[in-house]
Image (cartoon, rainbow, N blue to C red; front, side):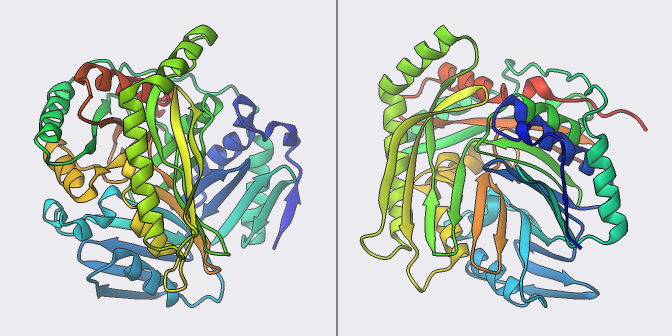
Length: 446
């Protein structure tokens, strides 16, 4: 059954602070616990709440499990993780489907020779085909696949969303270097000068000393951010809410592969004068320009490796994009997938994102596993959606708060090159954490 519901807030669906109306509705749906699993995904002023689990796919280091209805299939896989997922999706007992979920930073570690860093059974990807989808855009709310009772409940929750004052956030201090981040950056710089690799992204996690209400934090954070994409999910025991600054990769039905690398960062949102000054510094800083240029060079080569010859191009180069508490140098690279490659191949060749791993990727990923004390999991992986029609879009899981087993944390990194200063890179992580840390909402005891 499908219904169009006028939210009464269609003029509030556009970008920026006013976009909180649909984000609040999605957060209210998530908080209502109608279904155990859900994924909210926002792009281009359109939100979807994908709820319930019609089918599920989980990829680990050793096996791939597909559950559709009462049928569970478990098999081993080797070689390409993207091929393993694509093959599993092709066996779904539905003629048409859309999947939602995530792939972790570890997704391509085995192919990069870094699989020995992973514990047996590590989850690399978790996807669902939802029972229903509720879409919010300028036409209101459209619901697909829900039974009458669920549709009525969705309608009622949407109508009531935003009528109460939001919970006050509990800002989290992020300026204490509890993980010896500066020393780890110094080690990376020394390895770069030694010729081990050209660039690496080193991150640090900040534990949240209280239990986070992920749905309420999503609504509060979206009200104060202008991301490229946003997401809110609960799959299995993992919850996350994020305000992604960057598209890892997207493939449309015509086979066009697009990636939008961001590299080079300065603070944003402090004042008009300070923002102008930071922008001028960003576009003239040699370290930031080098970091960006080498990232674009790598992205171009990756797209070119799966594209029809002559179709790969940099369609936008080193513009400044404002994303929450920071501004970035940004470029766009695109090409047309060659006939022998599908959308999952396009994702795999771009993964992990060069702006979240380094150059060359194999050496950089190895350095990340050596220099970071904890595994990243979903952080700097991607939240994605894909369809049986050949479309796929994956957004980088940055500017995100995570919750699992009662523990909550945030995380940020910086791109390290030979010219990097440990103090400046630490400050950059603080600037990025500023997109999430001020908007954390504590979970109330029930």
